[in-house]
Image (cartoon, rainbow, N blue to C red):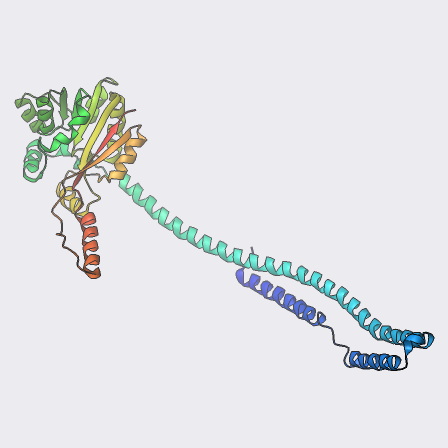
Length: 375
C-alpha cells in the first residue's frame, strides 16, 4: 500500500488535470458574437423592404423577387460560417466532456485511495493500542489466576470469630424482614437454606409450617440452629448440594452468602441448584447491592470474608445463563437519604432534581434479592 504522502501527490496531479480540462471546456462553451454583422444585415433588410413597399412591389413581382433572393443569399452567406463554427464547437465540447469525465475518474480514485490509506493507518494505530491493552489485561488475568483465594474463604476463619463478627456488624437480618420471600416459598417445599447462619430464615419457615433444612460450614452457627430445634447440616455447601437427588428440592434460598465465594464457585452453586430444584421451584439469593456506592464501601468492604461483588444485572445474567428465569429483583434496606425541599423557582427545582439523582445513586438500597424460577 502506498504511503499517504504519495497518494496526496497523485491526488494533486489528478486535480490539476481536471482543472485544466474544466477551464478549456468553459472557454469552448462560449461563442464570440457576430459583432456588427447582424446589425448591418438588419438595417439593410429594413431599407430594402422600405423601398419595395414605397414603389408598390406587390404589383411588380419579378423585380422584388430578385431583390429578396439576393438578400436571402447574403443572409445565408453571413450565417453559414457561424453555424459551421457552432458545429465544430459542439463536437469539441462533447470531446472535452468525455476528457473531463476520464480525468474525473482518476481524481476520485486518488482521493479514495488517500482517504482509505489514512483510515487504514488510523485503524492499525487503534488496533495496536487495543492489543497493548488486551495484552496487559491478559497478563493481569494470568497473574490473578495464580493467586489462591482459599485463604480468604470464611472456613479459614475461626467459627467463633465469624459468629461474633456477624452479631456485631450484620444488620437487617431478622424474621420480620425475611417475610417478603414467603409467597415464593410456601408452595416450594422443601426449602434448602444455603448458608443458613444463625437460622433466622429457618425459624421463620418453621413458624409458617414450611418444610426446610439448612447447611452451613460454620460449626458455631450449626450448633446454634440445632439448639433451636432446626434441621441443619455442618458441611461445605457446594459439596452438600451435589449429594442431593436431582429435582428433590422445592427451592434454594441464600441470604448474604454468594458474595463469600469466588466467581467459579458461584457458577457451580447456580448450576447445582438448577439440577436439584424441580421445575416450577425457586432460587432466591439476597446479597449486598454493590451498585450502591454506600453499600459497596460500607457493608461489602467491611466484611473481610467477602470475595465477589455481584451487581444485580450480573447475578441476573448468571442465573439466566444457568437456565433460570428471573422473575423479580427485590431491593431492600433503603438508607437515610438527603432531605428533599419544595421548589419555588427554576433554580430550586434544578437543585432538587440534582439531590434526587444523588439520592438515587449514592443512597440507593443497600441489599437486593434476585428471585428466579426454574421453567
